[in-house]
Amino acid sequence: MPQTEQDTNLIDVIIRDHREFEAAFVELEQHTGRSDGRKDLADHLIAELVRHSVAEEQFMYPAAREHLADGDSVADHEIEEHAEAEEVMKRLEGLAPEDADFEPLLRELIADIRHHIEDEETDLLPKLRAACSEEELQDLGFKVLKAKEFAPTRPHPHAPDTPPANLVLGPGAGFIDKIRDTLSGREV
Image (cartoon, rainbow, N blue to C red; front, side, top):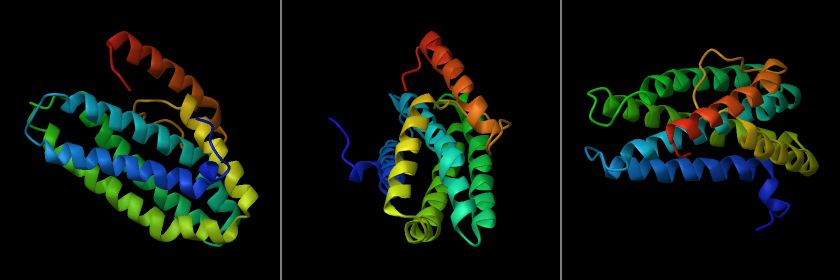
């Protein structure tokens, strides 16, 4: 189904992702202690979180730096939260639901991402909506959607998280991750 102009507004794109993350969180929380399909859902969630984070770092946070008076501090804070979540995702990635650390790490990740979502939706996104034209928001939303198509699917905590390095290295890491996903049978 083709996307409408409304669908590509940056704010709508980001909030739509946030709602999808929340639905996955609820699914994971409702099935705590069960292992059937849990790892697949956690892996899928991690892949989507990584794609989302990479796209935000490539386009949304530079826009915040450019358009907001406090853009540098807001973007730095959000990137720091991404880095913390990526460390948790990296530790979680190699675990099975039966591992003792799986549930505590998953709870930590969910809490961290919920906090991050609340920060973005109550602070950053309203500021960007006020500071950017509708045309800029449409352009940024389109760029975020495109970036997610080529973004990595696995956490890379030590990869660059600011332009221009993340714009150059992100698609390459994404390509390698997709090969790894295919070879390992990981469905994302």
